[in-house]
Length: 336
Image (cartoon, rainbow, N blue to C red; front, side, top):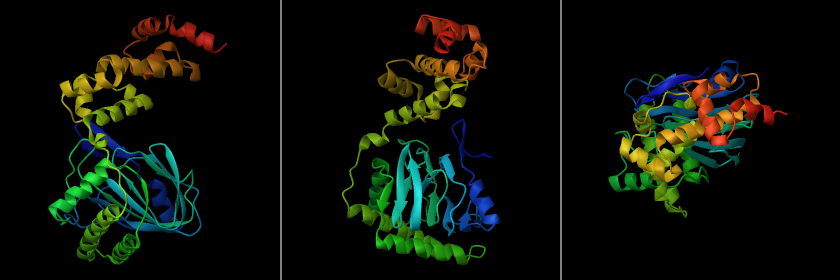
């Protein structure tokens, strides 16, 4: 089951509830040690302790599992470190095979999964930290407990925003820091390790910055543009029929991207040479055209409503203009 976990603008964002991990840990098939705020598995951190930390800890699986973590997003930046074993990992539709010593970094707008489809024997460390962003162009807000000097914090933020390489070989220092964090999590009793965790998490981000400095990191400012936020919005709409069926207005679409109507409309025109309303209908028609063939048990009106059109007649009129035939005739021809 999936549950809402946070609100931004007028949308409820959702992420994986880690249900398979909870069930496996309860059954003794995997060892899970984690501290958390919110809905994630683990023992709760004290109220007000390490704000922004959604989950920190590790799992230790010596046998391999019959589950994986399917495509999902988090409300924060996520770091994982594979201490031992191997894991299949996917991000933004790209596939990776993680080996011991690999570090992964994902941002809130990056869909990712662990396992293909199942999780292999592994010891995986993880940290999910909310920096109060949902879209690439939005400024990051680090929690007050992160005490890196302002120039260091700004440099680290710039690298994390303008380079989205998801997999890195961790330095020995980073590996050691993750192990110290794991020990602090494991021995924590009702907040007894909060001070140590605060120190270790600051060390972790400083070591991450030093790792980037020691390597050739290519920065791309376009990754933080409003245009990219709009592109990711339309990509999500195109790929998700549930999003197509939303009663979108231009104002609501703009708010979804954290932009004003004028800027959102301008970016959409640059992207598709259409107004937002025209492009929304284009996406809906494209999805309906496919659904007519792969879902022959549905009526034309059911297809229309599923893809967000207000009526079967309106859909049929638009379809005829776009394709020169009726939806029913198109379906009949394609299914011959």
